[in-house]
Image (tube, rainbow, N blue to C red; front, side, top):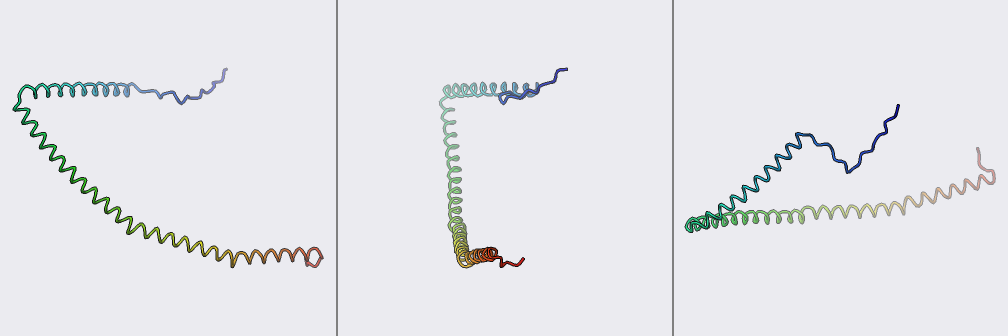
Length: 148
């Protein structure tokens, strides 16, 4: 019997696509193409209709101008709200976050000073004392004065 050798999958291999997914992708592509064709046809019909009657074109132009003015008002109001939100964010950063950062910096500086103080006044003398005691113990061991 021949043993099956596992084949390593290549990263470039695509996962198999089911027929339902393939069908869905085809219908989506057909829908997109149909939408584009309808959009082009609607634009062509609008251009043709606007060139036929000057009065209708003038009315549509006026309606479009009114719509654009209304849209400009909405965008202006949105910009005002945006500026107010940015101002409140700047206020928050200056009056709340900045003092917190300053307090944190002060705390870190205090801790740094405390660790330096402890290092100089507690840790270094203890280390020196331990080294002197170790030297003294070795001295007693050399002369056999150490009691066991």
